[in-house]
Length: 106
Image (cartoon, rainbow, N blue to C red; front, top):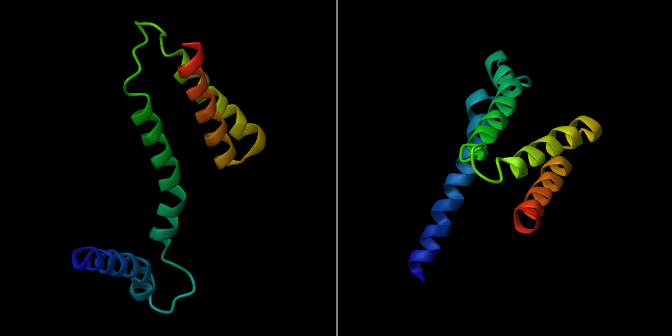
């Protein structure tokens, strides 16, 4: 019981300190530095690219099903995002489609 409470306390302190650190670091500024704004624009796309590569690393196009479920999932995510501009919708629908294809079709 004590171990669990200490663990919760440490997790709470770490979470709060990482949330408060930017406010302490930048002081009372209204606008973050240009480097932080640049990273805020650049990192989401870079992280999404890394996640795509990570998810597709195990695809073997030379063996059945030749990466078709993955290709259909990625294509559906891209098309849904272009059409609706809703990240959560495109991720949820393409993930569900991929899982359906893997479990039922392939």
